[in-house]
Length: 142
Image 1 (cartoon, rainbow, N blue to C red):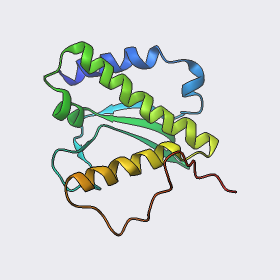
Image 2: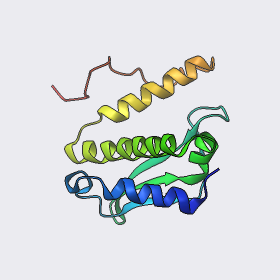
Image 3: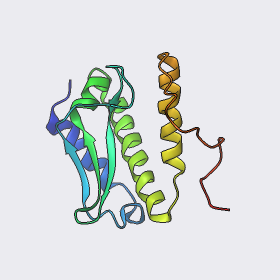
Image 4: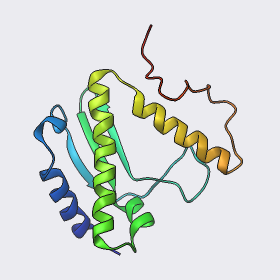
């Protein structure tokens, strides 16, 4: 298992290596929080929220990564694998940021499909969810 400080240091390295353009407008920053968050949309204890992009009218735009969740999934992997996964989570959340600036919901739709797929695998398909547009649809008007 990695300490909070070790993961924070890896995260700092990843963020420092990002191009300035990708974090433009992310005025709230990127934070590592100690929390463990289960995915409340998937009723199974093995699904965690590793990171989250948030946009708030007062607080601004920010990315949170959850140390407890990351350790629940990756505590016993080699350091290079943990770095790869942290980088993947950061880039995923930054894609949410960039797409939100552009008014694009593509990744949100991908995330919704992932949840629907997980629910089907668990035999808990959510029939209350609206049907998703076909793959490749970007949610563009007209």
